[in-house]
Length: 107
Image 1: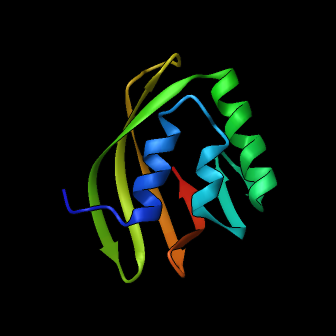
Image 2: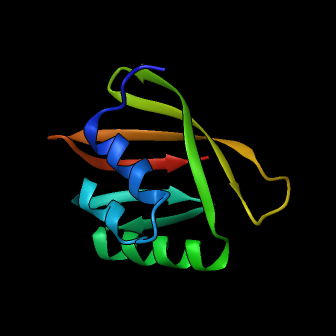
């Protein structure tokens, strides 16, 4: 796998840690996240999403592959936790602006 950009590497490192708020440090203030048909806009909403997601269904993710598609970084990751059909492979679509995550679509 290619080397992850620092903001993306930080996202995955902190996503697997004990503090679900930490990933917001790698997002721009007006970032947007799309996950499970919901949208989270801004670091406060993103932090609340991370806390809620980990509280309801604790999980870990492991990046497997990185592709650069004209500035959108596509990361395939194995996600495992206490949910049906675990583990699964999800695609994370990151758009970076000035080294920070400006948009993330998970699916």
